[in-house]
Amino acid sequence: MRKTTLAVTSALTLLSLPSFAAPYAADARSHGMGNTGVVSADYLTAPLHNPALGALYRENDDIGLLIPAFGVNIHDEDDALSTVDDVQDLYDSIQGLPTPADEAAMNRLLDQLGSSMPIVINGGLTFAIAIPTRFMSMNLFSAGYVEILAAPDISDATNTAERYLNSAVNLAAFGSAEYGVSLSRTYTLGGQTVAFGLTPKYQQLKTYTQRTTLDDFDIEDYDKSEVSKNAFNMDVGIAWYHEAFRAGLSVKDVFKQDIKTKLGSYTYELTPQATVGIGYVSNYVALSLDADLTTQKRFKELDDDTQFVRIGIEGDAWGWAQLRAGYEIDLENNLDNSVTGGIGISPFDVVSLDLAGSYAGDNQFGAAANLAFTF
Image 1 (cartoon, rainbow, N blue to C red):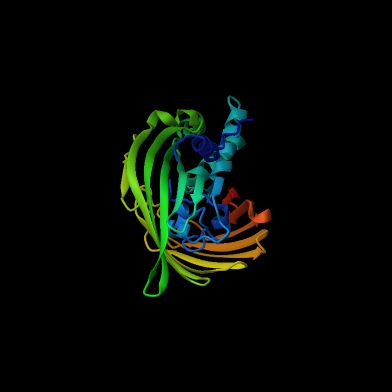
Image 2: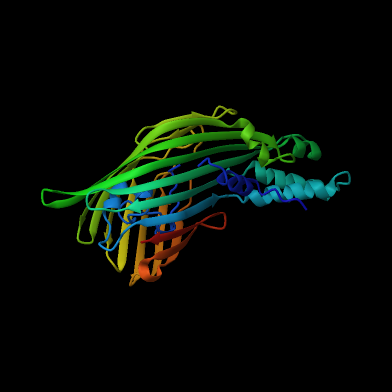
């Protein structure tokens, strides 16, 4: 029996390559708290959310090492992955000897694929080293992102075998790797304590497009359509705090970038993303609310934009264990609303392991994990 798990295989293959960017932050603590982070992220993961937070460290915080943070989200609204597997298995089993019942089943599966929404998978991978000081906090990081969209294109041929063999899968993917240094410092302005952060970074952007039959789909051929582009970009952020209360603004990818695909005439747009946040962050509890001020663009020709409102909460048991929950809403209605949750274990405040997951129905879910050390 053959299993061509279309988008999952694609994601794992692309994530193993140096072709990753910042629209999705790979951070399990944030993921567990509804993917918030503009005011609630810590100094080690500040470059992923708001560079100003690198200056908001505790007195006992020293050098931090994140190796690594990983996350993936899958959105398959109509369960097309399973349908692709089913139709391939059925075709393999009936070649040469199809019965009317077999042909009816084949056409039913092809009809399901023809009316299904595109499969969307995105994932990220992050490494970071943070060095907090009262003069200037610094965070060296490498962050990656990949997004894959796969859409079946079903033939209208009347012969069942011809219909299957003439049907195709259209694949469009974007990946980016970015390397940068995040700098931050606190100032007193008008009696208020405010932190400012700046992250210059180098980006490697790539797109992939592929069209192949359902029967012949092979992810190994994806690089025949690779288009690449290098760019300089920047993130900026500001954070105000008074005791445990915080407010902040982060703008990621200040300079708009776009990159075309080799096939299909698609253009991926990496646009500035502004997010505002408010929250309460203490030693025992953290509450955070983030709201995107801009729409996150992606493939220009596709209706895949997102704009989120997120809320998260964390309870901390004396710095040794954490419990997290959150909720996120896509105002563009391209993704279902998600419930998130997570746990953290941080013995002696030296090593921390964070695990998180999100759920929005059987066909939209995600997971993330972090491993970090502080010295």
